[in-house]
Amino acid sequence: MSNLLYTIAVFLIILWAIGYFVVNLGSIIHILLVIAVIAIILRLIQGRSV
Image (tube, rainbow, N blue to C red; front, side, top):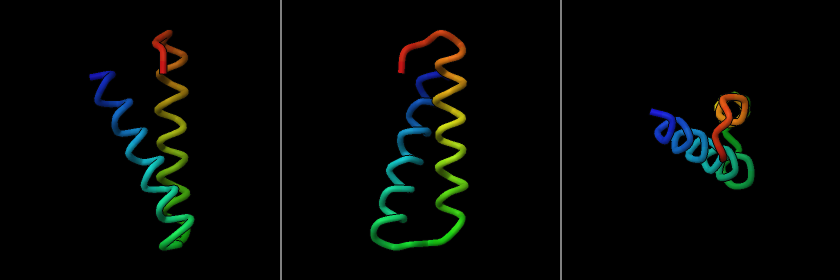
């Protein structure tokens, strides 16, 4: 489960980067970034390596 969470977080960061620099989809990309960052922070708080 935690590996899936990390994979989703990385995927969302990649989508954010593509959207921000190429497509510029607007505020939804930033929402995806926030979700990805929260997932990474939760993983760090739980004591697992990123």
